[in-house]
Image (spheres, rainbow, N blue to C red):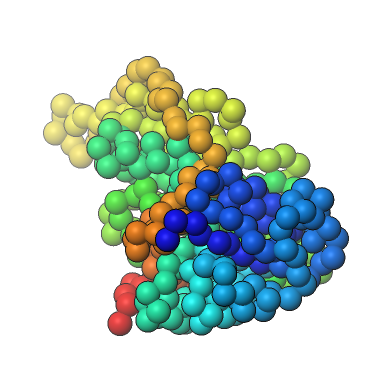
Length: 343
């Protein structure tokens, strides 16, 4: 299979980026784009007059020349569109989250496995040079034992009509946590609030607990006066500050921390001293993460490989989101997470 033909469903916020990157690959061709909005299809034709457009996504599924379907539509439609594409014999790349429930995710995984098709989730940050470097540093024990992951992901909009801010923004951090940390969370707590007529929370504070003394906290907000994308990861040897909005030096490694020693009077009290060392910013791969992700998707199709952001990792993220939803309904109660095992 030398050339992979692609159809894209959805040309709103993210669709143009997907089409642009697929066109940049020499071994793919975007044959068609589907969107229910005529104005979006007119944008496609204005930039790429050679691409077929249609208001019916079924046209893409029925096109025997199309090998893979890319889904960039509202979250509530992901499951039905991905299932229909798999049943039509197409490989699928679907925007996050994979589906609206664990049950739906299981169905998609089973369908893809039964048909030997690639099913991949668009967790773009996993392919960024910054996140890959963080994973490398943690795997190589450069930070020592990890104490906490603390993230702020806020901005003014985009308010989503079908999901709350957790399912829109926190899903990025959950995917990153799943990729870079050596442990899976065992419990989740969530507090949040809606400040619009919608029932969907626009601000939320999510906490994850692990079997160790590792804790993760994620603050997400659609109603903030500025855009912040900053994460702190603390180890007992070094710490990381990851600022995705930095044009350079997105990752900074701080050789700082505390030194605990016992008091000499044989009591249980500890003396806390501080270690203040250098700050180092490693060289990162600056290739656009979406391009690398799409390149990986095509490679998995051609070589029958399991994607890094495969559907089972998507299921793990959804399991945490479901636990968070239960927690917020119970006023922030700590909810134990079930393991997402394939039966």
